[in-house]
Image 1: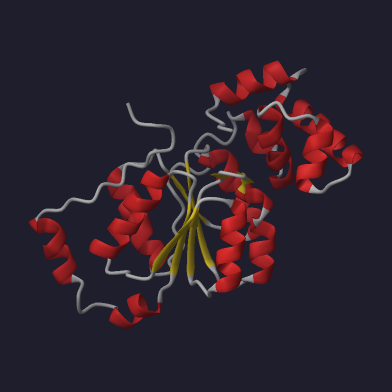
Image 2: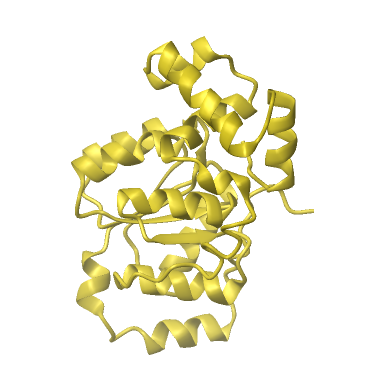
Length: 235
């Protein structure tokens, strides 16, 4: 049984890997040398798997890892990266909390969100921050690898699942800020603590909470959690 969020990426240590590596060895060398990639995911297996694939198959040797929002922001402050591959749920919160600051502080950084969260919900919300590359971890291996290659060549290519069930999923109506609050509500965290965590006034959190209930047609936290489970919105 695969743990939640474990990606389908597998590094095949066979002759094919080395054939692929050799076939790409003379292509786009300057691009690969200039790429500095940061992977931010709370699952070690995801980070290690992606890093190995990028190194062995695509020839990208400058790859770093972080597991939390705090580590992510520190890494970006200390080094200049060209590409960021980030999950929605990190060990200390949601990356939605730091993405606005990342876009403001590092406008040239290419960002791909790689997550188990429903792409029809989060992929749409992230477009508001100019992030067009959203890849679901539940995608097939070929799609994952193809999207990674396109992303690292700075080609915008939306995952096939984005918007596929747009009209059916009640969470697609939520704004990025409402999705931030939703993450904590689903964890059973109260209004005051959410206010402290997000550094937002309590009445603002209360308003956002009311909007979430209205948009999802939920009357209480229990119903909201059941709905989130039904639509695979993880927390």
